[in-house]
Length: 409
Image (cartoon, rainbow, N blue to C red):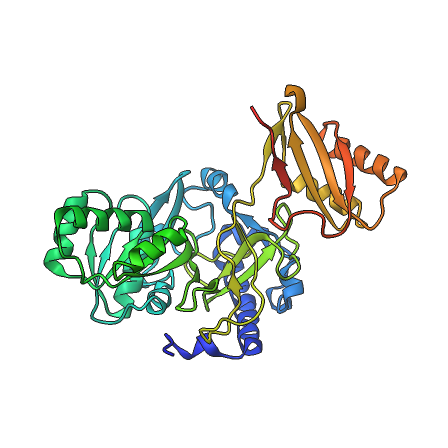
């Protein structure tokens, strides 16, 4: 078994101690060098934050709030430690949300991901992520270059030209979305073109259906997927075990209940929260808005870090009921008022065309008094009327949903 470096197989306790040490130092750095964290971490001693319990008490920085933060303090919301004038590149993601790249070639830590996908020094990588506005192409190019690979900047579209370039240059690997790789292979078959040099692919940006993976495997291309964001870079990556996504070594990852910063029990679906140690753009307890869960046990590939089940939906389940927005944070507020409830799920439907809210609660045994108290809390917090339904512990689906909109129009 081949690994990128010894970090991947180290003792989990050693990894945890290293992460906690880095956390304290990154917090001190962020407070000192960024306007945002100077305010967000005011009154907090970074060197007191050396446990998961202390980490869980820190405020979240939510991805969905970056647009407003950047409007108030352009261009990066005060989160950047590196001045714009010293950035290697500046990117724009939908929103718009602006990110910067420092001088490092692979600040997104993608070299490890590509190595796990079979890429090696000397390979030519056909890069079909977009080079326009967003950082996707540069995230993968940076990792490939650090690994010692050459890169062809294919970008998106122009399928026939993509096929011709593969025929002429004979790259060993592809990076891009899985759907576009399939389009390229189908076009090559239609043209009778030989693109058999392509043996491996690392894909991201969308789901990899099993049928697509198998279709490409039948054509000699082994596909591995990774989970990455424009802000963080690589978060989790697939190995030859094809059992979940190994969390990247240089990140501290939590799974929290949507609408809160509270860690969930192992195996429970919740929002992915990441702390990165990028000195140029420090992100502490960055709530990605994506749902996942930690898998039990250790990967058969031998890597010892925790594994994510993959992308399982969006955590921001805000919905509008009778003209009023209802947020996951409001459900969390109700839960704090009634700690005897194990889990809650607000279901919104519309029987007879009229919006209705029902707060489903897991509890050993309900009561009329608790029902009335919950109805009152629901109305006080959301300013809307709703009903309450009790269910036994474990009765609600483990899918990370705090608000379920099941209305039919």
